[in-house]
Image (cartoon, rainbow, N blue to C red; front, side, top):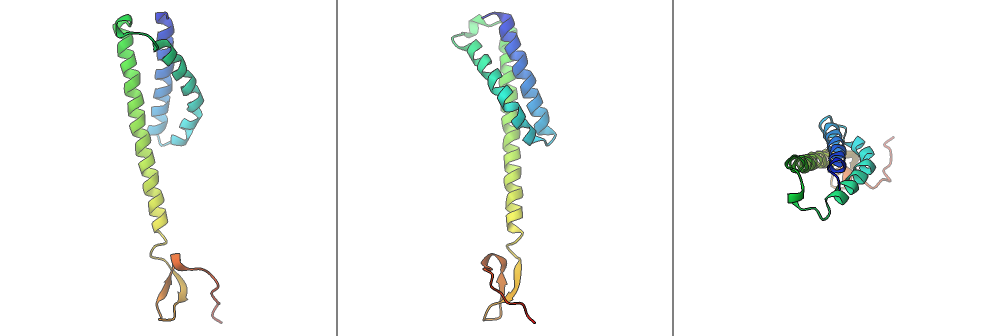
Length: 126
């Protein structure tokens, strides 16, 4: 493995991870799916470069760049978690919108029928 090949692989990984971070930070998480194929192929090249390598064989600058790539990947992971938690929260709020809603119908005891228990078959009052 030459140093230039590893530097090229590091450049590619950094570029993809920075793009991914920018998309996540600007609220365009769905667009990160477009980077998956590119990211996976870059990761395979990156991994193949490092298989069997010891840290002693790497230049100090390359070690620092590898640490930067790992740091970017961890940061993006945290951003993805935040997006996932935000979506779960939004879904929960949407699901709870109907909790206190009632159908325009009443039970035999005079209580209103809660929306989740509505099964249809109600007659329109004439």
